[in-house]
Structure formats: structure tokens, C-alpha cells
Image (cartoon, rainbow over all chains, first blue to last red; front, side):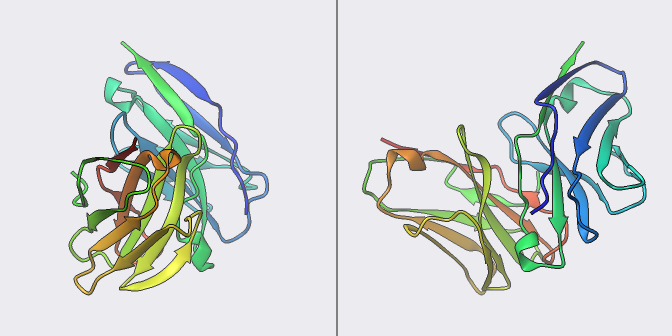
Length: 113
Length: 112
């Protein structure tokens, strides 16, 4: 299975943009790139996903490299509530074993006022 | 609130015992997933059910079993409990098999 590599931790100031990187050099053509986050003492929550093109939603933007070997989750204006562990996950929905989420260690984002 | 409910919120039991964790998915969701989160192993996928049928297994021990009932709620049964089974157990649901997953608040299991 393709794996992802993320920095262990990152820090940002409140109201500034945050760029969370993810490397996935062994990604396959049928792998979707998903991002979930886990706020303290809560279950994970979906953030965004994409296949090849950049994606935007109300929570964040996802920028995918042209060769798909890396991606970046962009939080446009970090708030204190965005402090969480962010997980970059590859999901191959062609195979039934790809339906589940394979969480790695993620990036712990600290947001300071 | 994700719409996924899990009971109980906390569970304290002794080694060797058996417990049942319950999950009610969001209305309309057919898939239920179980995950275990421990300090040393992180978040790990255990098992996936879709419309009552088992679809995939992850790192689920033989002492653990699950099922999804006709009303789509699911139960995770943990038996012969060991100290190492202490963890947070999350249930997630999704509409189908490749949609975004919505997670419940989790059940914290403590085995003494």
C-alpha cells in the first residue's frame, strides 16, 4: 500500500495561512488523497479530498502536485480551533481493502494567538 | 455533532472480561467502520460492514468480533480482555463504501 509522509508537528500564528505538506511518492493512479483532522478529545473529521485537480471547500484547499507525488493542505486563516492532528491518507476505492482509512502519525498543528 | 452515536462513553472493566460497544450510524448511512486508537499504535482500522455484511478486516484480534444488524447499528464485542486493549474505540459511518466517513465521539475502554 502506498504510504504518506508528513512532518510530526507545525506551528502557526492565528489568522495566518497554514500549508501542511504530505509526500506520497508511491501513489497509484487509483489513490485518492484524503485529509482528516482530529481535534483534542474528539473523533476524526473529514476535511477534504481530491484525485488530480486542486480542490476547495469551506474548510480548506487541497493543492496536488502535477505528478501527484505530493500534496498540500491549505488553511487560509488559521484559528485556535484549527489546532489538531492532521492526517493525509491515500484511499484506493477500487479495492475493498481501500475503503477503510489508513491513518499514519499525522501532523500536530499548534496555533498560537 | 457528526450524527454518529456511540455507547457507552466510558467503560472500565477487568482483565479477562467481555464487553460490547455499540454504534448507531448517521441516518441513511449503510457503512460502519470500527477503529482503535491507542497511544502506542495510533488510529488503526479494525473492521468494515456494509449493509449488514462484512467487507474488510484490518488489525482486528481474534478475541474481537463485530456485527451490523438489520437496523444498521453495529456492535463490537471484545472478549478475554487484556491490559493492552485499553484504548479509544471509534465508530464511523458513511453513505456507501467510498464516501467521507463521519466519526462518533468514541468509547474509552480501560482494562484494569
